[in-house]
Amino acid sequence: GTPTFFNIPVKKTGSTVYFTANEKYEYDKARLAYLNKWKPPIVIISQSWSNLDSEESTTDVIKFLGEIGSKVYLLEQPPELFYGQKDAKQFLSYYGLKPNQQAQDINAKQYVKFLNTRAYQQGRKVVRNIAKNCDYCELIPVADLFIRDDQGLVLDGKDVLYIDDDHLSYAGANKIRGRMQSVLESYYNTKE
Image 1 (cartoon, rainbow, N blue to C red):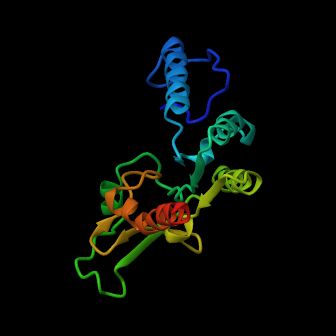
Image 2: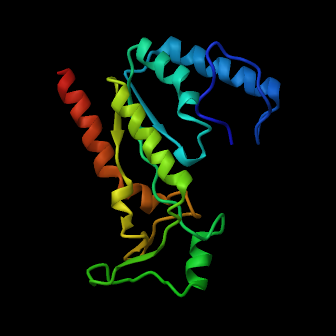
């Protein structure tokens, strides 16, 4: 409910779903202060890139993270599915899909049409541009784990991979675990 990116120096802007304008201002100041204090060696940014106002809105925070010496990993957004903010389990049941208890079965993976919107594709383009144009930023691609042609993977054996149309479940998040682990191991192995 609160944007990942904000202006630096921090400015008072409008309210969010969870914060008044004053609370949002204090929250952003605190985020900036803690980043400056901790100077984290790694920052992983995961967000709905399709909801980003513009690529320029990321500039201040991305630049600041570089100035404090952070390596920034940008986690690509999984595909958005067509059924909107509905409970995935309920909707998939309504749609006639049900988990397959035999994970070895060739039909264990089940797909639905994903919402290949202009906003989603623009978000993918933005995150790739940030990674390409910033030497301390790196993209962690994940969409390919969930997309087959114009369909999104929603069931893998007995596991439902989404909570709603664009938030991964625990099982869905586990599908990207190997890539996250690889990125972190690679970072720390180069530091030895």
